Each structure stands twice: as structure tokens, then as C-alpha cells.
Length: 237
Image (cartoon, rainbow, N blue to C red; front, side):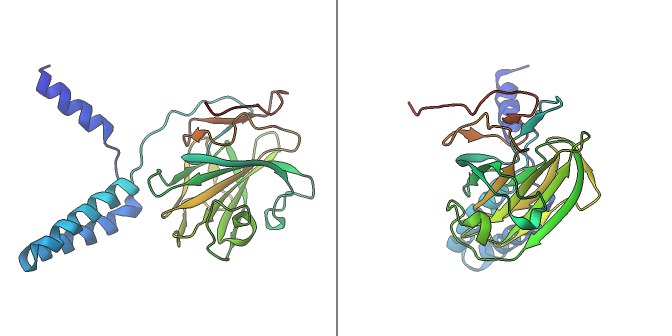
């Protein structure tokens, strides 16, 4: 293989495909850009940049998910904004026992495809209309528009993942529905633009990730239900 071919291969491998939900926005952006090249080229170049950004936002890279019973995998790319022990929202039907909630904040630069944290069957899918506060705020979990999935594992335990709209996000797209079976790391939804995703661990289980860390959807291990390890202590260096 020549050096030129190697460079092109490297570039091609670094480009992620665009999810089908973004295709219509790409077509609109590209169409408007072509139109304005005939009418007013300066605006056309701005539309080209916008179209490229749309392709970047809707990118859908493959991920390599660790498969072992008990592992809870990150459902979203982004920064861990909080790890707290809280009562789960009543609409999820998880009972009145406190659980560890891991919250991931997604900026407009993060991949916005959300993935299942565990394998199992979706026993509840709940949509809650609400406000559009900054998704980084704690109250976003209770007051913002959201879509929650409760996944029942093969051992009967339940884990919830909630996709939360943010200050800019106005659309949550679900790829799965009640009764569907999902595998760990499988794509379950998309949140358009800045947002947040919460995971509620089984009662008594602790997070193996700390506030400020970066999570990679479908790859980063959030928790291990088969481990008795306590919550990890971390520091920023």
C-alpha cells in the first residue's frame, strides 16, 4: 500500500457514518447550499459549513461493548455531571428505594446516539412533557421533557435510562418500544442537540465512574452488579 493510500485510509476510518435520522437535515442543507450558489455564493458557503456541522452532529460511530453479566455500560457520550443517591422518578415504577443515579451531560459536540446500558427487555417506556432548563442542572431530571426506559434483565432486576431534553434540545427520538428486547450497547434513541442522560443503578450498587470523567457510549463501564466494590474516589489532575 502506498503512503497516499494509507493517509486516505486513515482519514476514511476516522469518519463516522451519519445516522438515518440526520439524512433529511443533510439533504435540506445541501439543497439550500446548491440553490444559493446560484443566487448569492457568500451565503452558500455558510450553508456548506452548516451542512458539514449537521453531518458531524448526527454521526453514528460503531462501538465495542464489553459483554459480561452484571456490567452496566454508559448509554451516552459526554461528561459525568453528577453521581448521586436519589429516589427514582415515580413514573419509572422502580419503587421507593433509593438508587445511585449517574448523569451524563452531552454538549452539542458529543455523539447524541444513546445506547442500552444492559441487555434485557424494555418493560416500560415513559414519555414526560416538561420544561427545557439547562440539562446540566439537577432539576432537569425532574422537570425537563424526557423519555425513560426501564430494562428488565434476565435475572429480573431493573435498570432505568432516561433521555432528557436540554436548553437547546427540543426533540427526543426513540428507536425502541415497550416489549422490545435489547442488547447491551444497542442503539435505543437520539436526542437532538445539547442534553442529558441519567442511569438508575440497581439498589445497593455503586458507580465505578466519577464526576468529571468522560464517558463513551457503549464502551465505558458505569457499574458492575456482580461486584461489591464501593464508589470510587477520584481527583482531577
